Image (cartoon, rainbow, N blue to C red):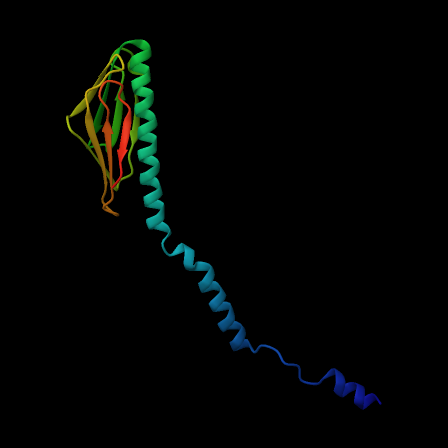
Amino acid sequence: MMVMWWHQINRPIAAFTLIEAVITLGIVCALLLLPTINYHEQLELQQEKIAVIAFQSNWHNLVNDSFLYNEVRDLSFNSQKHQLQFIDPVHPERSYIQKLPAELECRLQKPFIRITCGEVTPQKIIFTSRTTKQQFKLTVQMHWGEIVEDKT
């Protein structure tokens, strides 16, 4: 009886071998790492989109500020520092700067855009991505300065 009991405890049980376990673990890890392969490209793309949205918000604030205070405001792009400057010439402490991602280039039709009492002449502002070659074309409407994004 004792011998029978001993054979029941020590009988072979079907299970993974060490090699099978390592292969399975490798497959699971590879599946978990798949989303991170494209991570840096996706991060750059999201940073570009966020920069364009932030520009639209800053532009809207600049136009509203010019209209409310009935004063002149300027927008310029500093290519050496890679930043947009929203300038209040009367009160320099109200001026602010938006840094752009390194991959995003900005082109203005003129060296700077002047907003006078909330009114502005029509302009094209183009943001071009060096990595994705995507362009964000923004058109400033006449007088009110609203921005319309051209679909590309």
